[in-house]
Length: 407
Ligand SMILES: Cc1cc2nc3c(=O)[nH]c(=O)nc-3n(C[C@H](O)[C@H](O)[C@H](O)COP(=O)(O)O)c2cc1C
Ligand code: SF4
Image 1: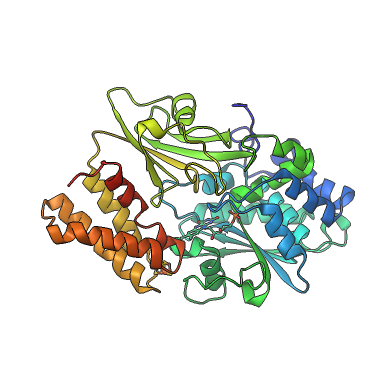
Image 2 (image 1 turned 120 degrees about the vertical axis):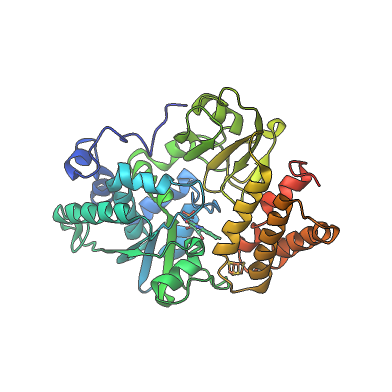
């Protein structure tokens, strides 16, 4: 199972800037298969059968989302979410660096399945190089008639546009992303209605993460059933895990879902660095949970019953030489800066958490601060408008309840 590679199979083996290289390893065969040998409903059936669920963090079933848009009438949009602003997460960037045509093929097939005639790639404003790579890939693919008017001489047509964001974390949230493309403030909207019903310019829109989309060609070529047998039963397939911190081989690894954190650290990342003592691991980015050594058997999967939400798939391994106060400040500072300011509990709560984190470091923590922490965490978790605020204090809370931070 360790060798199953769906997303990274051709990384480093092909020149990502040459479409011919991708074609030589079977690239765009899934698109051909879809155009020549399937109808939209059949392809949708394969995605549903695969059990693929969103790799952007929430793990929503992709087939269900596609179906919601598929069933809508009128003009529709498809959006590839390449905002990727989560600290410690760079998997979508590498998908573009290493094999941009795989992503493009996935975008074209997905857009056609849901019935969109226009697709956007919403790319993080800091990803200038990746934008240029995608622009080149788009030009090459258009010349081969893989997108544009009458794709491969069929009746399908699709326009694709790259839209560059400004690098705000909140613009990765799908409703804020839609606002941003519309030229409005990058802040979330109340859901429902969900974008599948009322998204870009009021039209039905599927927003999907780049990693989710890059899995689509494999499913079309190999069938949903085959995909559904890989990894965890509840959220099958492979996942890109980004390991960093006190490990021997930091980097990106593709592994089946359901794998334990321990296995990822020991078997994939080469174990803990010599001379370092494991303290805890943070799963899924700055808003992620902290796991102690005894909890490393947690399985990495999506869904309500999962032991530990895997979020974007990043795993930060922290050893005992790290100053927890510095870490608390950096988490709190991130959320303070990235709070969009729309709602008071998050705008003020993240700021106050950051101030308290700094007082911890300076040894100036008061009895009042200790009480206020509980208040702020409660308020963030229960009263903020969107998940950014809800999870802004998760690591802080875990640090306290798991005695990583003592006071
Ligand atoms: C604060 C915040 C930031 C987010 N950032 C991203 C992001 O950078 N990329 C992404 O794909 N999804 C991000 N999401 C999740 C999206 O809202 C959405 O669920 C996702 O793009 C859907 O794609 P999927 O179903 O393929 O996962 C973010 C959500 C929140 C609340
Ligand atoms: S929780 Fe934070 S990021 Fe979300 S709407 Fe409120 S202020 Fe904006």
